[in-house]
Length: 389
Image 1 (tube, rainbow, N blue to C red):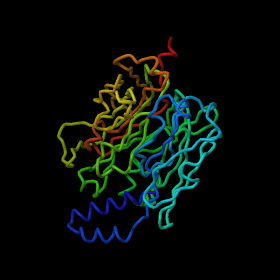
Image 2: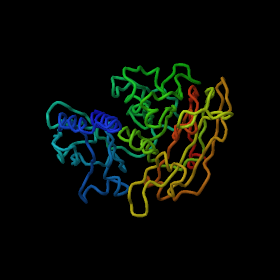
Image 3: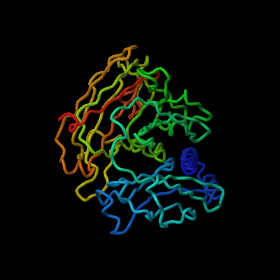
Image 4: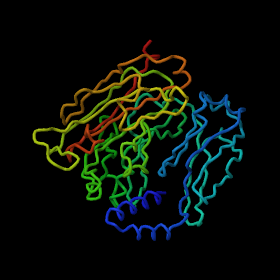
């Protein structure tokens, strides 16, 4: 549910035009209509041995567009049959099954339903306990689903399946944010979408688009197509857009190389964040990967965002395709991780995250690029150190 985000947008717009009194009335007319899980955690010393690190017993800052809450564990086979999960939910809301009640997660996800205080709104969350490993080392982007965002717009989401057929929602894009200002869009209109004619089977199309008059009003005039390993936090679209992209997922091996196939054509006119044309500048696509320590020295959870994905001190290695020349033919790319070696014990204890990022405009996070720039991606493969020995 995105009611919280919608009210925030209304508040910002009305404040800009000086109608703060009206905004207060709107807030008063919509009390206690939210039904979000804000945090989830497992407590108790008897459960600590199921986790690699203490920070993995808690999931905080859960986005309002999130539908799955994942706890990373050593082994799903050693999980107790009865395990209590505790939640912080929005004020006045209720949750079923009961908060802190013991549930069996060994057979798969458990669905929790949160109901708003006024009883008019409900949200379902799947809580999953999962081992931290990639479901596959190759990504063909064959698994695609449709999801409805705000304004009845429907967009594509990409996911993976492991050998047992379990779904892993490890890919994210900015599509959810686009729904805020674009009513009734179909998947084919979004910056990130599936295509039927990839290099092999299906593929991904990333396209830089005009973000609409509202986006321009807030100094965010374009929306670059993007796809990355991690999560997208729609709550921060207007307030702190560089924090919408939460890069990285835990992995259990040290990556060495990423390969794949691409096609790319830049748009005609490169514009800055003010939509001013920059003469002579040509847009570029971006493909890179980052391997980083996922906790700090105080064992606090670490995530990378759009403002520190290359500069965070917890980064060990970065891989980047230096150049993606325009081409209408599927062309192979290759990039190697460069930087410090990982600690083998930390690798085994899932102490590192990895992200892979694709964008149709290299400076898209700064809302600079060329409308019409289009990047196609398919058949991505990650090679790991342990496999190469």
